[in-house]
Image 1 (cartoon, rainbow, N blue to C red):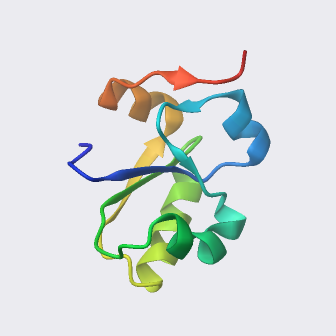
Image 2: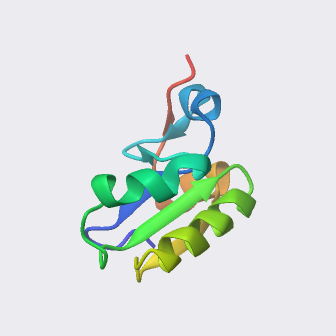
Length: 94
């Protein structure tokens, strides 16, 4: 699922991200993604895999970034399932 050059984006709150996030993920919370996505991911054609706790916030984030011109946004769903699917550990939260 994680294609070459894809960016993994955690759209959860600061506390949730600090408690544990998928290794290598960027933190762009849902309430700021419209402000920060262009700086964090300047190439609009770069694949994005967005995730949250359950997939609901990441679905909303996908719609936002698509409206901003990002053409390859994927809802990765929840952090636990996506971590297993990508075979990447959840880090932080010690």
